[in-house]
Image 1: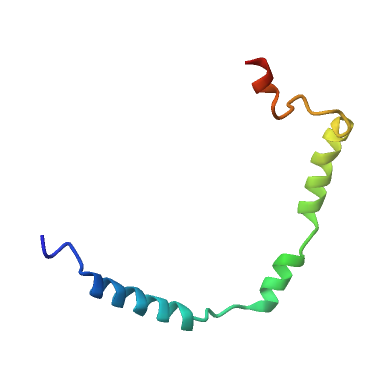
Image 2: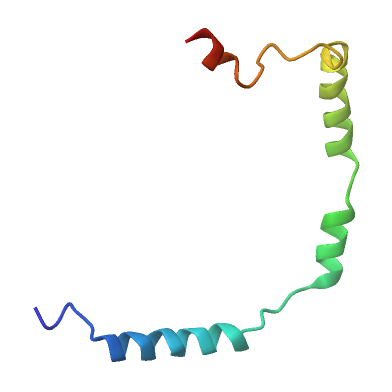
Length: 74
């Protein structure tokens, strides 16, 4: 029983240690690569535009579902 349970003091110390490690952790980030990935448009935008164009005719139709309707029917 003693081996699987950790006392409150030890548990708090462990959490404090982990919190300290996370606070001082600084990952190596290639910000130039990140910027390139975030600013890439191209094929994804074209695919989205093609897909969105299929549904444009439905954009102005009212929604079939109106919140609260299910309560009125009951």
